[in-house]
Picture 1 (cartoon, rainbow, N blue to C red):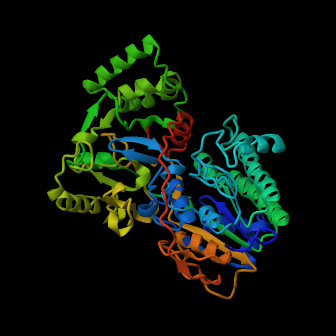
Picture 2 (picture 1 turned 60 degrees about the vertical axis):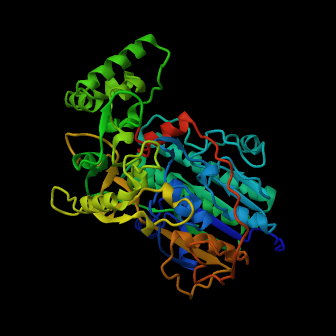
Picture 3 (picture 1 turned 180 degrees about the vertical axis):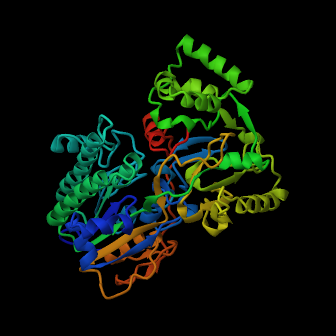
Length: 543
């Protein structure tokens, strides 16, 4: 056991989607004095993320120190055969930083870390973040009520707003303020050795206000103010600022991977019925209303649209017609989701050779016999089929003749561990992360203008300063897997032999050791329509 210290020894500040190309202009303008002080007084560098560089998989990699093949989260969704659910903390099947610290008798306060609901029972406090329900269970129980009482309110997601830029900015900054105040309150109450506070709005602002410099600066300034107040209140010995991935403009096109695979003979489709449709071509995020499944009229219209789909009038084709005459928004506002689903052309997963399940996974899954419920590819043909997929996708070019993919590779190049087989079989990395991959089906076009002009990039950032940091030592080539062992070293704790990273150079590295095998939590269903809707509105979940 390690002796407790007086006060916070290490503070980890998580900035979702932050990178040097976003930060440096704000540093130059003097907008972020508190964050700039960490970068100026310590060491900093661009940091490699992982594949896929998206929130639900990358943050677990950062706070466990292992790749998705070892922690088991590859995207926003967990798949069981052809069915899916939104991931939660029980899907993270590796030990987190705060669980390592708990093993050594140290206390942690963790606020807003993604994929932490339901929270573990540790010495300290956990307030779950992104992917949690709006009123999450916190640890200790009753903590959420305490926060709401002390702070006036506490939310996981932005409060309602009118949709214009000013109301969005106000909602974002309100949420950022809640994070900082909650963290300071809990740090004062629990006096932790380790603190982790994550700010998600530095990502959300790019999805909802792409390219709006005023909104981006406002969010970052709000974060900087909270970081400054946290530094003043907690006075940590060591500060680490890290992101899960970067953010940037997408200059390429949208790539409809399942449509590409259909044309190559790998994907089969069907119309109407249940399944995972690809129907958000008219802008999914604008479909706000829930199903009225008990309505006799809705049921009749669903049957009617399913029948129309059977003769070729799918919702995708109808969407193109409605958009051409300017009434797609009106129809989406008044059309229940079940009607769109009934008329959608869908990937027929059981009868396809291979398919993209979710664009966030950045790859293609083979419908393998013995692994999938209705697999059609014999085990003996797996490598042959995978080789054909790799060759086919590597040859794909844009209308300008440029390669679509920077790399098309077997999953083993990126994932290893007990859960690697849950990943895609073929990883598809778009060139410079400049193309927007989608699992949609639309036969009229493969390379349209991207749905989102700004999206995730591979390089995030890391900065470290404080008593435990030697600013004269080089950071080397940091990766997202190095953050967890580095944090443990700042606390003079051994890092795990099983981690895929190692302590970064400016930290006095501790030795590694073999920790007891992690006992994975029993997986719990998320089944939260509100969480699914938020993911759809941000373009993460193609429903």
